[in-house]
Image (cartoon, rainbow, N blue to C red; front, side, top):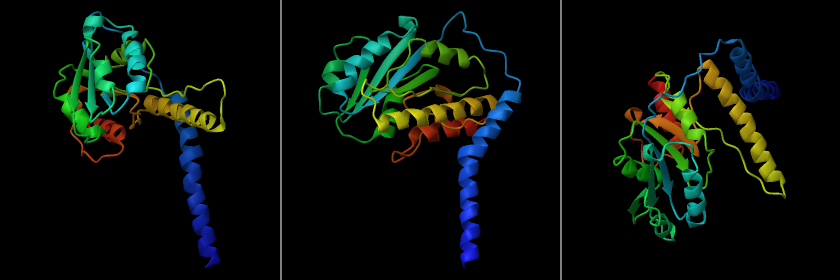
Length: 234
């Protein structure tokens, strides 16, 4: 019995070591050896894109998020803003209605993020959709970078890199979360070079509208399932 448990212990330890150490290192080595594709260039005629936000009671972030969105370096007439406020009962809608260039779709009943996405997407006809969260600030050059990457016809989804902002009084929890996402981003960057990236973070990811497929309303990891389905399409 003891021998069987010992063997099981080493098997499980080996699986964990491969997942967290061996796989990332192997991927990094392959990425270093792989010849990178020529870098795509921005098209002269930039496409129209939609910045899509689902929100529930996000009044504390609305003004900051809108200000951040309006600072994006992209032609104003080619950047659409869509918010779906799923069952919000605070001042989210009132704050958003102050901005004439934001389309707000409100449903009084809270049915979850996936349902809100489905509801809002029926009003979106731009080929590129950029999903982002109300409490996520994105860099001014992010949209142009996303559009540039979509110039490669083999790209169906583009994932952003998540970074944790910390205040002056850094605590152990925020430091640990930041370190984890730096590690996660390093793995995803290598996955992308190797051609094995399958998951995107919901804080910022973009996709071709034509590749969207409805998923179940009860899906918890909606960002992962949506991006995985795109990867499965090739």
